[in-house]
Image 1 (cartoon, rainbow, N blue to C red):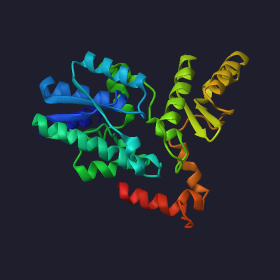
Image 2: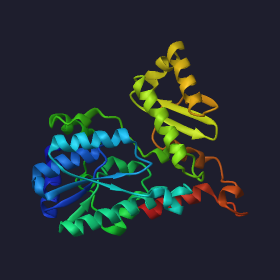
Image 3: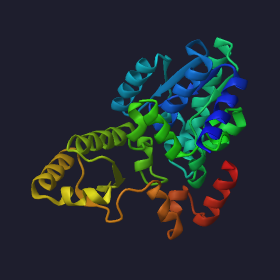
Image 4: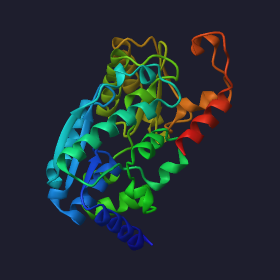
Length: 297
């Protein structure tokens, strides 16, 4: 089954002939760049990384290092998500507006290079999660070869290890905007605070971490096996001191541990206030999720 899926991936790439890849340096996009280079050759693959306030510099440095190691032609562009009103206000389908801007820039790079297609690293397992950026990809004709080949995260990690890619055991990463509650403004200051907090926690040895902001509260998500470490007196005191210096008033640890998309959970039980709506109208959160999901399919 593994070989059949990898063969299908290579066939998809061969038919495309030349590709511009949305490349973040994460597990999926790094694997896709490597497979594209091995299948099409270095001259027919362009890996493009978008820099913005939502993307930590540490991730960018890692992406550059990995691209160089793979021998990929690597281009850096700059996106301005915080200038997009529909992104900055942080609606449920925020990712649609981010991806739409990104993909438009990649399409322009494709046009100038006279390449055949634009692709991203969406994999088969991503269908289990809420992915509003899929609608932008579909509207603009961006392909997802990993998804089309039925390749999920486990196979990507296993084959990445065989290919000796450092990313085979790299923790999953999502843009920093995902740490903020929906319908609260995304600002450069908030994103910088989150980035500094998470960097510090990683330096302390936490493998996976999210610092979710709820006004003056920092809600920390870790793997459950790291709970004991977090509750040790020395580490606990260091974390509290450092995060309070960054401006957080209260520091809490989420007892459910790390999980993707935890900001969506409030939509199961809490309706948005009229203030969050920007007027007197109150919406049904379940209806909004259903509507956004339909738009993403």
